[in-house]
Length: 335
Image 1 (cartoon, rainbow, N blue to C red):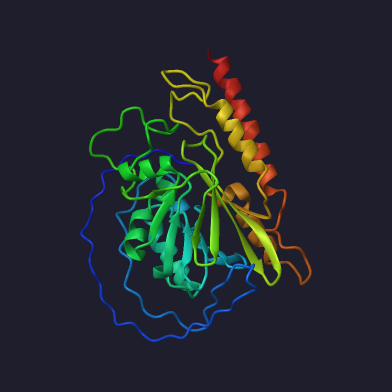
Image 2: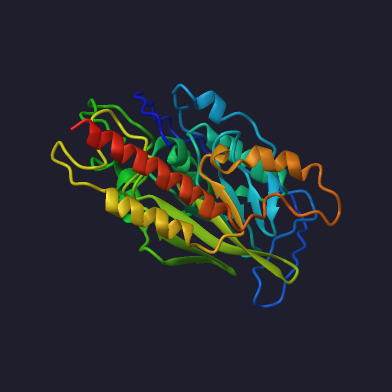
């Protein structure tokens, strides 16, 4: 979800910092060939050059969204590294890591610090995957890609949004007439567009894109497996399925735009059918992350992990479908 804000961003020159690297020994454990390898650092991470973030975004919810959050392991080689109100996940391997989403411009530094706090090197991130082209999820992409040299990946529509630094004109939250010189998030060219169902890889890691257009034209949910011992679970990074829109936008069509109701319904149905053991949404509140963390802190040996919920995707799909149908009724009632 994105709340539109308008700001003029300065683009400071990138300051190159050089720090002599310290020697470190990193031990890695390899699971059976069919499992995803996990990186398990056992020594302090060597000193790294400092990440230089882009100017911070200014919006009503930015401070709340970017509040500090302790990083933690979700399951196996998947970790939560985002700030308080915006999700970002790290999937690790000895051959390099995958970062999913990058939050606000100011979230880049939070994500970097959280990755380091877990004992990993941010510069080992090889791919940055994106959900959709709104400032609260891709604002930090430019700085993190510049720092890590990682390839940025997303749907073709999200790639276009990143190239112009703003929502594409067919986005339900696109402003009708954006004023000249206003940046909604730092533009980043050269994003690799992936097809629906396409799998991207880093070493033993494989993550699959599922296009779920509706909230934005390029909305993408990502799935993969993470393993602990012989137990592998289906991980889902759920893109938004909400009907938030700019004034004047109608999902049922109008003002020169076609209806997107049927395609949105198809996206929600598709999402609900995904293999789903652990689900995290782009805004953690939408998947009750804090509630699950509190429950996890009190579980006893042998108790179920609150994050493991095979019904989570179906439940979110059901709630999203109801929200869409309510919106459709409201729009048709106003005609």
